[in-house]
Image (cartoon, rainbow, N blue to C red; front, side, top):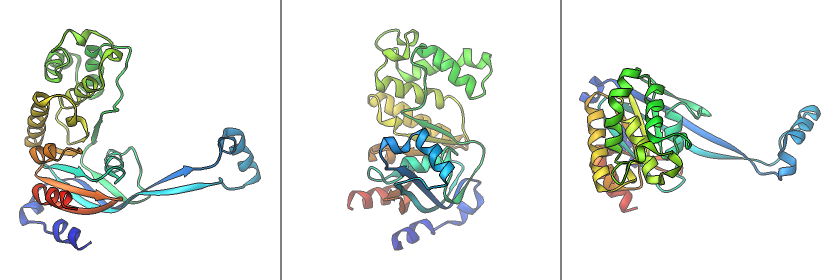
Amino acid sequence: MAEQTQTSTNTSAADSQRVPTVIADDVHVIYRIHKGAVANTGATAALKRIVSRTSTPNVREVHAIKGVSFTAHQGEAIGLIGSNGSGKSSLLRTIAGLLPPARGAVYTLGQPSLLGVNAALLNDLSGERNVALGCLAMGMSPEQVKRITPEIIEFSGINERGDFASLPMRTYSSGMGARLRFAIAAAKEHDVLLIDEALATGDRKFRIRSEQRVRELRASAGTVFLVSHSLDSIRDTCERTIWLEGGVLKMDGPTDEVCRAYEGR
């Protein structure tokens, strides 16, 4: 706790002049997991419990996020690191508004956009068609979509080994799909962009392009959160890093300091 206080409360006068984009105030996220046998957790059993007013059996609570607080500002790129199960993805989903906190609150400027390797693309449609649908969903006009689609496909690199843009998404490797998801999301300037492991896919050329695009998004006054197990990507992209462990904010500060502490844990 002392380590968190030392880093997260050391706010400069310059920070107070910047516009906050995300404020997490004592956020707790709790999952409720049903442990009962399948026969006891189906619709029929649920109806019987409602009629008899009995409680759901064998419900276990998992406290995924435990009292996390921080403030993010315009122009920041913030890395999120921690071991598997530390709560990184749960925190991103909570910031995005997809996972309501059990206690505490998250306040955001605009609508955060969550980009993850499991973001939905339609497998039976071509990559090019998925680009168009994704851009339309982000509020672009048909004219903008027509103009920017070739740029997105080129950025993703899916056509480097053939005309994959015209093929169905089901023919893509997982890395190609992840690169295309990032290229679509990064085509628009976001108030808050949440990236879950997308930069870990692809070759070095794509990672360099992705990291440069994150810098451009920051320069346009957006805020970027990046979850990655690659500390190299975090160091290359983020000047600030938050370390979560067991759902607790372990450290929040300059990336080099936090990464060194994480490596020496």
